[in-house]
Length: 620
Ligand SMILES: [Ca+2]
Ligand SMILES: [Ca+2]
Image (tube, rainbow, N blue to C red):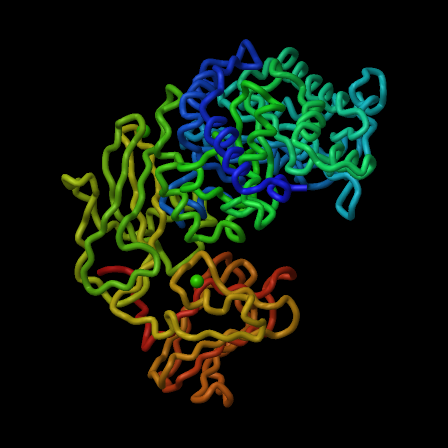
């Protein structure tokens, strides 16, 4: 069904030129759907309009989190997405409300503290059903909703819908009162057919449901902080159904016509776009690389005059391709870190000129926001000697940066990517202050850290502004004065090569080995020759081993246990530092015996082998 199958290469090039390149620069000015939009939100919309077609904003969903991206790349996304749905059952029960409140708090923090743009989608569980899901059919799905009745006052469906909308608006009102602009993305994947709101027979009912929400939120509840984002799904359910029924060859015109019927109208939409799963950095549905321009062209016809975004994806689109060829999506918001977005890809993309990150946004509000700061050296996995020059870049979008100081966090090696601002603030009093960086002519803050005792260290830079707002940089995990004998050496595992055993020895703390979910599993490394060692470090993901053993062997056949962990207490992203009387061996094996979680395969980000690891984790 994809276009490329029946287009010859020459026509395809023309297609790219017409729809890809030209399509990115012809948008007209966006008038807000809500004429009473607050100035803060209007300013965001104007800003988005001003960069559209020339550059692309980075986004990240809460599912992937923004801190892992920050840890990997030293940069945070410009847009941070959460869900205005509480997930936990029953709907509106205490745990549901708790999760929803956290999403509201996160959106508020993203704007007021970080100065980023918050986005909220809404995985609305079937109204009237306390256990209802957004998905219809399937094993996690719910029953269908009669969308004709849903939009008709006096029906049970309508009453249930309005009850949910009322309670949801009560939460969203907190953001309106705090004057926090929000990219509000309800009824997402609206034409897909896997959520209950897609009325495949009568798409006009779905479009009317959108207007019903808009009228209630905007006109009745006065939620004038919402920028309304319309997102289609990559496969239009009604169109697919119609193709099958009519036994028709797909045409672009037919698909556009079908999709248009769900669109509620420009008066109800500020931004439009599409969600694409699965996708790769180059396109989606390998090897059909033409599909980003195709999706762009479709949405340009569905929502003419609206600026277009990749509202939700698996992968960050290749920034080089966006830069050179377009199409000019306003933003790309991936749902996952890992998978299609391995750490190297995150680092590359978030530091690419095509993608705008949080630190590159202009001040969009009138409030003071926290500075930004990024450690440049040493970075993760760096081995250092007894002295090192620490380098960081920092700035403040209000121009009120005061200083940058460097600290050693009490460690070693907790999973900093899982920590939030509060965690860092609580740790700071027990951290070692190495001193303030000096601003160099090159714009870097530098400090010489000398007389470093051998050991493992977690280094962080803290930038403060004159109003006391502070930001914690990415954390560098450095090894001083000792050598990891296992780094880059040959790895094997009981779980087979696909589980990525080599990733536990690559120095990258964001990717690792993941073993099979059943039974005992092992991860082994061949040091290449006989070595003397007396310490092993294991950096776990959440799926850790409660009981495990470290074994050594001269030949990879005969194993001898040198350490056994009988009952490890769980901690996210813990690094265990294991010391034992020095041995001489060529092979080292981690045997995972009992799981610490009832889900997931054992996962080790990094396994290190050392002659010794001193107790010291602090400078004197
Ligand atoms: Ca500031
Ligand atoms: Ca690794």
